[in-house]
Length: 386
Image (cartoon, rainbow, N blue to C red; front, top):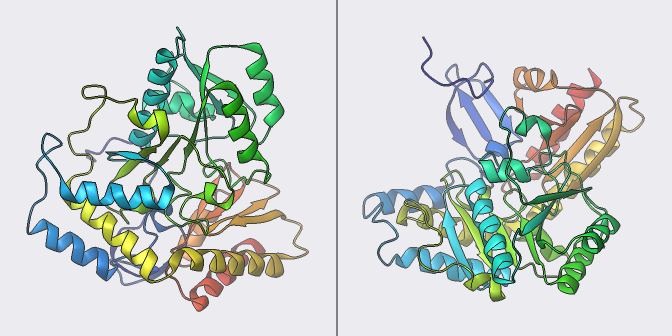
């Protein structure tokens, strides 16, 4: 009997070790990892700097709780605020928890502004997590089905549609915030128009709303900037991240500035494990490595190389609707559902993901070589052209 709850439809492989962009199963077969644990292992597997940080900290101190001062947590908060332009950080254990913190900040902000039923605008096609608040905020009925009644306090709009947001502003006075991914990840790597985030910033400023960006997947250098909003000249009021921050160690962060940074007071929110010494040591090693090795800039170069390589290789293929990317968030959208390609890719020795039924999603490591990038192009193109 399998004593695990059946929350995952697992592929028939168990990996026993990893190194850089490669994984190995129990039979010694090697796989090129173009998914990195769903955008988590941005530095690849078994990165020596992260390994050393975890090992050293595990032999020193793992956990004391947030009842006491945590110097490593303060150091990490300082670094993240310097990188982001934010003022303060709350540490959690996952992206969903970071987004929960953001949603709670928005509601407290709304109540303090005199709103009796403060609401947050969220968008179709988004994914924010699987807790009750974050699955309600998510713009995907498959995630929500069976968990009704959903929470109140969310208003939906199409992604990449500023006019829809303006219309909501004209029709209700209960909005307190907008929560959006700068690039839809689970939604199929959908990249908005250049004016979208600046337009949201202006609407929020005009109405006294918080602009909250979910950078759980887009953050930590993946798009070629530390945060995706840094491709523009705006600052959000709240930004969340997780995934690549710990390179596999569970850590989430909710960053805020201005009034949003002081909304939480003692007793408003908390986390037993959030930001403990072990995860903060790992995250600091990640930040050091991203900076020292120029990996954020490298993500932009590698992303262009893979995206253009796929366009060249798949040119004229009638199965392909679009190839698009932002740094190392890359999508090949097909004309028909292609879920079967995940198993075919596994057989071919490469790990991929399929989003929205017909989008091959690639989220490779920032540390791969040019040759490994070209190998991704070759193997993915081979899957589509077979």
